Amino acid sequence: MDSSEFRDRGKEMVDYIADYMDTLSLRRVTPEVEPGYLRDLLPSRAPRKGENFTAIMKDIERAIMPGITHWQHPNFHAYFPAGNSYPSILGDMLSAAIGCIGFSWAASPACTELEIITLDWVGKSIISTYGSASECILVALLAARHTAMRQLKNRFPFIEDGLLLSKLVAYSSKLAHSCVEKAGMIGFVKMRQLDVDEKYSLRGQVLDNAIEEDRRLGLIPFFVCGTLGTTACCSFDNIQEIGEVCAKENVWLHVDAAYAGNAMICPEFQHLLKGIENANSLNFNTNKWLQVNFDCSLMWVKDNEALTTALTVDPLYLQHKHGDKAIDFRHWGIPLSRRFRAIKLWFVIRTYGLEGLQHRIREHVRLAKLFKKLVETDDRFEIMGEVTMGLVCFRLQ
Image (cartoon, rainbow, N blue to C red; front, side):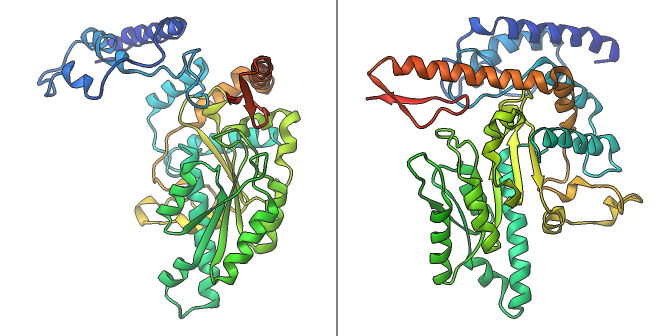
């Protein structure tokens, strides 16, 4: 495909995408297919010669679309939203065209600097990019583990790392996302899940008691993951209380706000961040509520040195002359390479502005409150938990 054909096919693809979005409500939300359905519709071997693009597009409707769950469908209610918007799609198109791999400043200066600027924009809007919240939480846990191990080695230089590692223990509420437990598995540390109160919130006293109990057993508490907006019911851990405990006990506090963190751009929700000054790191997913398509998770860290010392590997072939004054994000996460995700976030923020994004969040919350009232008029149902944002949990009596 040359540039001339790309122009034609690209315009056709934009038309196809626009038609898809405009007529999405006419499709089934979930597909009626069985596992393995696609093998019967596509050849068992790759084509020896290239095919016409028209034939490829015909197979999109014939073979691919019948197996798609339409997350953008107006009747899709299976999970938290998977945001999308035309500016975000256009930003992704441009990112794909540029095709840079932003592992260092030198690899693509704008890729690094735009990421810093857009996170500053969002950060300042909430008073205070990874691929997913799961990655953010794992990176935070690894940084906390590295910090704890370094402190322990200074105190006990003759004890083997494996023995010290076996003593580390981390905490979250029982309603924390499963990726928190997985982070503990990958990091080879014990992850203890704590009980919540009647509002499904992890409280400081529960955490304090658990830490005291584990210290008596010879364990070493080092990491807590608090949640703002749990997956199960959008409940909120008491960040102020658990933050005070973490500060007292010298334990890393990570705040997972994957869904609800987006709403912090609205002043009326910022009280939920009370105590955030004691957090060491914070993440949320713009693809859940800020009109940015997957994947685009934001993460802030209080002490970037604690993060980078845990993850830095610096071979000669990746070093460059600006390394002493530029940020290289290859030291800030697990993968070496990173996509130019910031450009679609930039497109979305500039297109909608903070006021436009705030309006969408407020409208979703208004609709959730309306739905709650409708459910309450039917005595067959009861509401579970508080309806703070866009999630309403209800059940049959």
